[in-house]
Image (cartoon, rainbow, N blue to C red):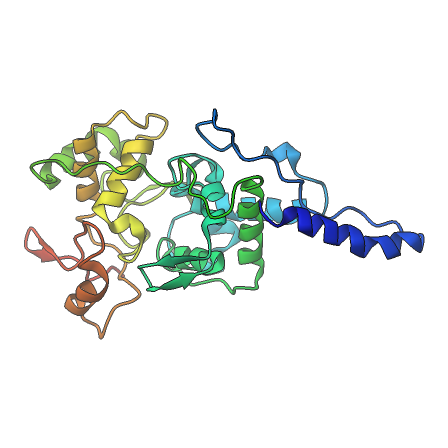
Length: 307
């Protein structure tokens, strides 16, 4: 990434007087950047885990990886549900077309309509804890954020800064011509999703930990998470689900099942305005993709939240 050679040169300059004094110091620098993907490459290739140096930098990256894949265990104080980072960013944050970290890190700072400000990468990660994890933001200078940032930085080794790479987002798919069908989505869910995520979207546990995340209810993402948008969820589902068989659902069925999933109640949007669902919808949801927050479905007003 841009700036790494300068950092390496600075480290060498700082180390020179120490070495001249005869004190040997271990190399604690990051890896030398690899060249960006060539024109013949369709997807950026992040470094392999066995490329990590056995030093302080490598240790911090490995800690970030551990937090990323098992957030419930390694950052439990900031998680309020049954989710891990890797539930939305598959294959340990490496998978193209599943919001991989190597494509996200080089794009920040960036403006986000969600909070109407230019966000740092730290703020972006903190938002994930508040919304997708239904928890609280880890301190900007704390262990969790530093480790996750190091892991993201390392996965982006050699990626260009400020350039949107192929595979950065979930590939968007068009809404069905006749609109989404929640009833059809219920059938698609029963046939393809319930085996892992449960008949009632409750997820699946082993040894007290979720191995398949809950899709609605008190232990799922809240109404402020990006995945509450039907269009976002449909794109993710089409590309990645059923697990290991991504791309097998039709575009329409991905929309239908996403609508079914997001027609259920979940934890309240933490940005709730004056205790009012209507005010919160008007400010945060009315122009935020396709979503059902503040909408009545089968006579029930969604957005009341869960306990």
